[in-house]
Image 1 (cartoon, rainbow, N blue to C red):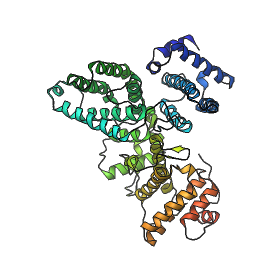
Image 2: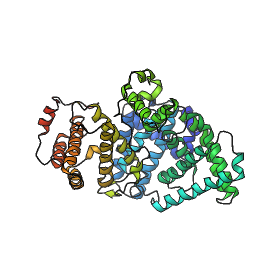
Image 3: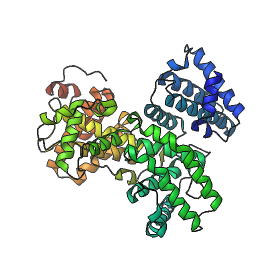
Image 4: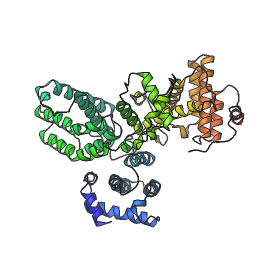
Length: 479
């Protein structure tokens, strides 16, 4: 590895997340990784792409799986931890041309695919079991910390710019995410957990104004000082937590200044706040979402691509779409922990829901090609499509690309029992159109689509005939 690059990496906060590894081991692993990259035809690290990265990681994971003992797993995990930290560093420094948000999303999928997902205690033997009562307990007592701090005289001496809303938001995010992802409670936070949440989830998912990130660490530091003074957590630990926060602050603020690091929901929310849109004003929210769709979707919000001038050209369509579950209550839905070789994952549940919302948008946008009952408006379509997507993942651990006939048969029987014949016919017609669209977009195979449609309908319907009636004479290519 280039000496200058190594020196810069070792001085970064990304390197500090590897404090459990010896620096010589880290360098040895990186040299091996770069040699493999070069052997695969990429002689310049700046030219590496996500396809090559994850081909390499997957091949090493597969080799590791051939010797399924704990030592082999740990060798692979150390390789992955080091490579991941280095690539995130390289992305932040623009050494590689993959933005931080896309890289993190790819890591989430890879971790789920190979059993490294932090949501699955069965697949990651390095983490303690996730326990619901622990999650509830830490949420309750940290909320009490915040309540007591705000009522105390110390609150009046907080840093300028720190608000109650900001404090509650960031403390809740740090508490929940540090436990969900790292299994660390507020009395055992580590540098890795604090850094990971502040520079990851807090940037990509939490709705904080860019200018307010400068107040995140002061807000948490003030609360922790109070907690320490009350003797609720050991003073040495409190001082360590504050050091970890300070060490992550500049990187967090830097990442938050680039909207490419934001997830879709956050980009939408930020743009709405920027335009002064009241979240409770449904008509304004709907008009904004329609404006986004007219601009070409979520990606139009990146890098100043959003065209405000379209707003004046839009009508007041009362069927404009929004996420019907912005508070993510679907995550609280009763779900299977595992089924066969699949395990429930919070990250997959979130991306699955977002896919469901997008499929609903797509189905409505293409309603001239697919039959939708006249009684259904755009919010209805999005609600039904996103809900069936959520339910099938919770109850069967199936995402749209691996939906099965069996899952839909069971779901269809439940629909028949809980709706009258007219309601069932409307709902099954909508879902039939959804399955057709997913088949046309190559999300589902033609064979599986036919079987699912058969399970929904009382009579056999030819997929080809339905597509003809809908005017779909030619299969669309997936974009």
